Image 1: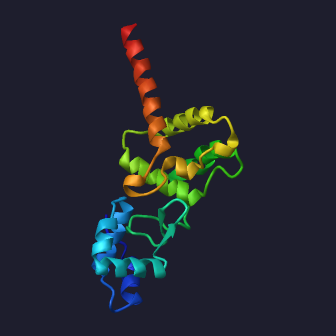
Image 2: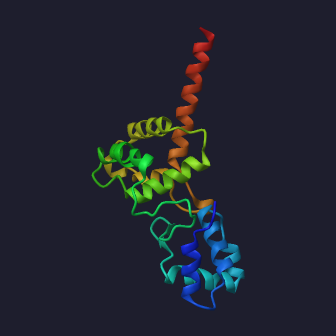
Image 3: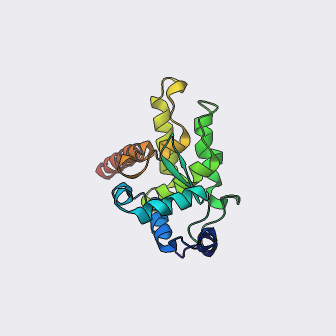
Length: 189
């Protein structure tokens, strides 16, 4: 994947003093959920680069969830967030609607859900859309009180680095185990 040229151009326009390579390195680390805290504390260059990224709204941080939000595409191949997600429409139409059926505000945002879902699928290539929907249905059966329903975007992933959690991953494992058990039974018959 190629780094977005408009991102590089924007970084160069910000300040003649900006270390573009350092900014790109930080963005790549954040994109891949690498823990950069140790390096941040030891590197004035990294601290300055992160301040530039935040102050120019190239990235923002949702402090409630500790999630980094990319406001500028990192890669050329990514679509702008203003465009539709094409084959990812099911995230809003099927996935999020399951949460909204339990609690009106349980869906989160389409952008957040779609971005997290894309990343989830890239990290879990053996998982199918059907597995995700079955996992959500299984999770929803465990929710006794709508007040305690985890929002759809946080269900996919909440937090960053080593503190990140994914209930979706947990429930997909359960769904896969049940699927394997069924296959084992059919083989025995």
